[in-house]
Image 1: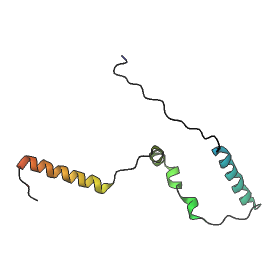
Image 2 (image 1 turned 90 degrees about the vertical axis):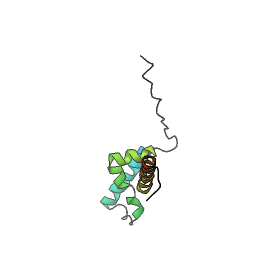
Image 3 (image 1 turned 120 degrees about the horizontal axis):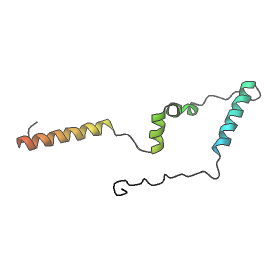
Length: 98
């Protein structure tokens, strides 16, 4: 029965036209190999090179970053829970007291 099974829409896929990620990766590998062999001078330290390496290494963080969703803030969640508990107490007792 197709009534109870709704089909998911096709996922969006945007291939880059002007940028070839594979070529850039190969270029980086080639440059790193030349530096190791001593054909190029050593690269100076840049802390920006390490940005995102932990996220790339973990599958769940990589998926979370690719989805674009931001995680909920803990403070907001606690405030909402406290407000709901206060409302629940008010509905049960009918009085506002702390």
